[in-house]
Length: 165
Length: 165
DNA sequence: TCGAGCGGTTGTGAAGTGCAACCACCATCT
DNA sequence: AGATGGTGGTTGCACTTCACAACCGCTCGA
Image 1 (cartoon, protein in one colour):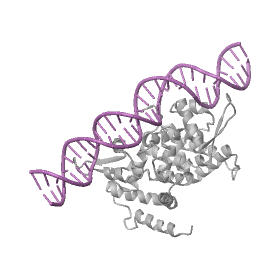
Image 2 (tube, each protein chain N blue to C red; image 1 turned 180 degrees about the horizontal axis):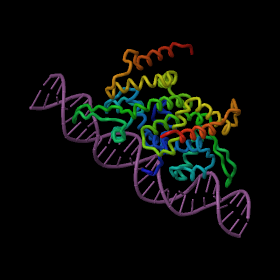
Image 3 (cartoon, rainbow over the protein chains, first blue to last red; image 1 turned 90 degrees about the vertical axis):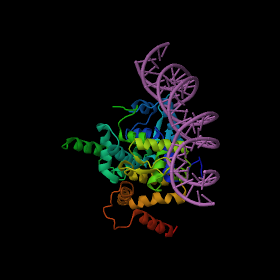
Image 4 (cartoon, rainbow over the protein chains, first blue to last red; image 1 turned 45 degrees about the vertical axis):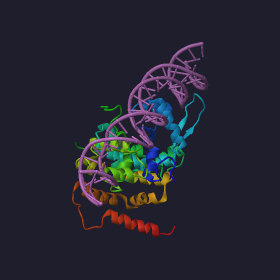
């Protein structure tokens, strides 16, 4: 049953796929930062990932079915897209962000997003996932009329910043 | 603002604390497996952690405020206890387990726990966290009369195993 | 033809991992 | 008293991975 020396426990499988210093951060920048291209991920990262590490993680994520790569030819902008597996990580990001915000020292400005995801709850996560499906998989949202999560995040952020300290 | 070359983003802070191959697995065995001692963690692990790695992770987790160590003297059983920070990881485990169960290949028997946590939802997580606070922090549960989560997990497990395939 | 931007690759040294052997200490049994 | 097994680790070594900087070929637009 063991495939690479470890077990079939769901938590272990998640750790095998995501448990290193960079994989989750790359996915975070794609999910929340909207980055789709190599240089965007390389230069836009708050944490300063090295190019070889980024290339390796992108390759592994494609291998593992968590990204697809649209090869536009050499010297052209290749586009990375989320898959259903990586879109399904939104609740994981929300849980990790909530925990990090409460139990680690964080930068206030960067912690707002985690707070908004926590306040919005599973309903907001579901809407955000629908929005990601539209952007990355070309699947139309169930209710395109309602405001996008990015808009709702912006509105909620304004509300948070306006509230009394 | 950077402390070790990375950012103050809550997700990054969580990855810094938990993002390696073993830390979350050690905590999982303490949280869900009830293991409190070095040899229990060493021999009871499904994944077969090495003793030097386990010692290093336990030391780091104590440093990071995610475990406390009750030193009973040399040659005697030292006991590791969860802290509020590590008890607060229960929703993270639930999210990771749900994701791993749906999007990775898992062993059926080991996936049952993730399913139960998913079905039980935040209310079950909260009860489980109260139970962990009682066991590890000596804090009395708010409502000791209700059945423990371990009992409820066992009951739900029986229900799952009895349902039609 | 030239420079800027594209997605990477290649070295190199440092750090982490995995395995087995080994250690001092303690409690118990004989 | 001596032997045995359990406690929480430590040490040495080979191997792999990580991280940093420099570099590469390609394409597009001026």
